[in-house]
Image (tube, rainbow, N blue to C red; front, top):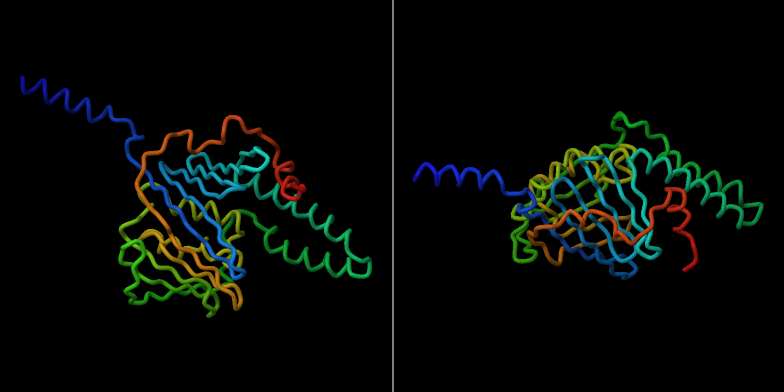
Length: 267
């Protein structure tokens, strides 16, 4: 009898679906220097992340190396690899540059085009391979008694070539690394950001190392003399269905070119 009960218990344990292991749902608020407040909901589970607000949503599937971009306003979406996304985005930006320059006075068009294209060049030259680190990223860990959501936090500061770019307050009690492969995600984002800390310090190994220790419940991003302040309003474990990491079935699939063009459509 005891052997039979033991066998049933073992079978039951191995029959538990992976979906019972809950992921994280985190709601963040950001305040721009202009006083504009936006909200973003981040969900992670089984190496998938959904992030976005009212107008746009991004779904990252690390298992498939795919990104889905959803335009909630037009109820459309595109899914493809990160390489396809970069190529389509760069092509779309070039079209946008042509459109913007054509509306300028003719005597200013050449200078404007040169400026836009020099900015694009940093983003465009991605070949998928790591490059020599021309930008030095350094960090400081500072004792701080700040509490967010009732959690004790640890303060980290990030510097790029000696200039402070980001301050975070993390809590080890909220950690997404068990639900989401942060090393794989960092490599994923590096392909998008050209391995360039100037484009995003959050794609650097230093930031990934911090994220493995805990989630940032409060952030301050320094943009010149301006500050963008972010704070987590809620964070909870939650079991998420597979459908949560897919576009709404009523939304229409479109090409990446159509997606980029839709950004500047009048509303």
